[in-house]
Length: 348
Image (cartoon, rainbow, N blue to C red; front, side, top):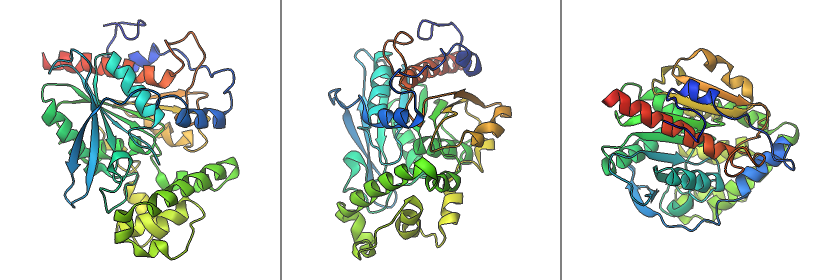
């Protein structure tokens, strides 16, 4: 099988050997420029044509799946469930662009809004966080119910990647057999360590910006405020750790924010992941230190692909390597097509 016209192999580690090196866009050589460009450029200009599937969660909250089915898609063709990062939604440019490229490759995609995000805003009384693996499992089960004959991949961006790894580790051996592989991009597998990094140097810009987005999102959601009336008392969190201690961790029953971070981080259970997993990250990521991934090099189920540049969810490359500049989206397509071939061979 040809992957993006480059090679005819189907094992993840060999597929990554065929990945073209990432080379930054000439105007985006800085890690911070890559990070900002990756979250605000492209994506939203594509028309929305998805079918919405509401998912009622056990506590009464509702979240939404956005189903994009390619023309001519058949019941045994591949599917992918995509999960966004912090302050994101199904509309995040990296989600839209990856779904579009996968659709063009014949993959049916389901973009998931985490609790109170995107189309789910106003439908949840509890906030999302980086460890909502039970919610993701329900979404995965819905996808498989809709597409029972399809090999299904999980694609997680940033905290969405942490959620996917957490689910794969804690449910090892009990996940649906249709799950063919994981692709995770820049996952903060140690949430506490990554949040601590926010308070240093240039990363403080992200800390303040993300916290402002969280705070505004909270105040405009009556459903969230109903469960936490203290949020209107006038306190303004100064950073992500303040916000989590004041609101998110407390809402989920944690007295100490450090205990919350430990509980939601996938790092402690990643050794139990059995599904073939591709983890893509950049050495110059300003939010997730690449040293976190060094112990994973010896884990047989995980293929680690590190680039020298790309920032956090950036990977906006130069022309001529892929049909467009979105190096990350094309690598997701390559990996899922490879996973589909492996799953089909195993099922034969």
